[in-house]
Length: 62
Image (cartoon, rainbow, N blue to C red; front, side, top):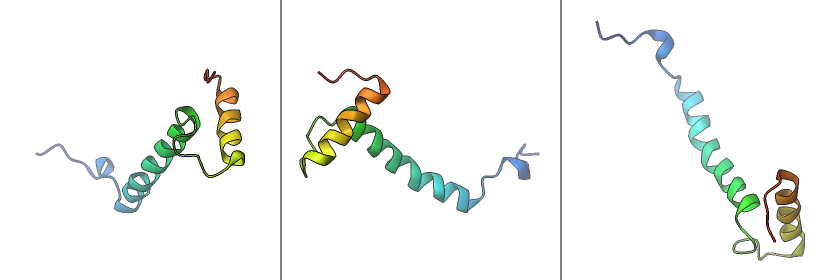
């Protein structure tokens, strides 16, 4: 016996969802927690949104 049961197999649609969601969530976390204007140079609104997000999460930013 290989020890592999049908309950331990991840369905492909669920796996695909996680493979797409994880990089997007990591990018959002980077933008909110670490960016400090390196990527969010598109305008004051995005910069302030990320800055307020850092304060909301309790991350020191200045």
